[in-house]
Length: 259
Image (cartoon, rainbow, N blue to C red; front, side, top):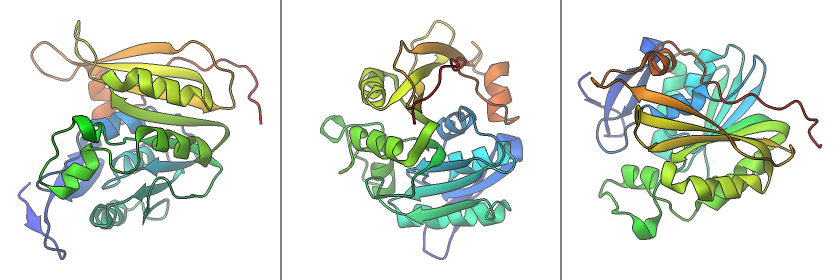
């Protein structure tokens, strides 16, 4: 859809997600939501009535996808960029989800309400020392770590979730070992989904999920192949991205969780 200029002077486009179940306004240039937050939201095992915190929510893509997929779930989104929060609030209103989804401007390192059933995060993927920083400030903040490092994101997520609740991250595959180490410090029953661009390719992204208070054990890994050889989405990926199907990770063990 053609870009328009909003009241803040930002060029904004309106794009379809989940096969048109969501219509989201986002910056026409620089930071653009793609499939990563959709896959992240699909992996959250939320049930009706559950609460979820979306850290670094951007324009609200992941939280709104979760709210659209799971009727009755309540979502709070936090992001440092006020312009993106304004768009996220607009998206919640325009998609008739503002009664269950709220957004606020804040730092992930701030003290947030605790006791969420689920916390999800799509943090900046690049370490500043190794990144080529975009001249677009919105894109730069979304893609490159600022004062909050990956460890800060994981600590914030673990702090905010209740015992027995889940923490779910999506990140670059090459930072998987670092993410697993950080999450294992406060979470157990770690489950990983390798996101393969196509069959036989190495994963570029991973989704990693853990349970607060659960015993630490070997990571259970599954895979999702995203594309067919001709570039089309696979049936499994298409069901998630267009039909709002859940992304099922390895089953959780039935061990009791420490309070």
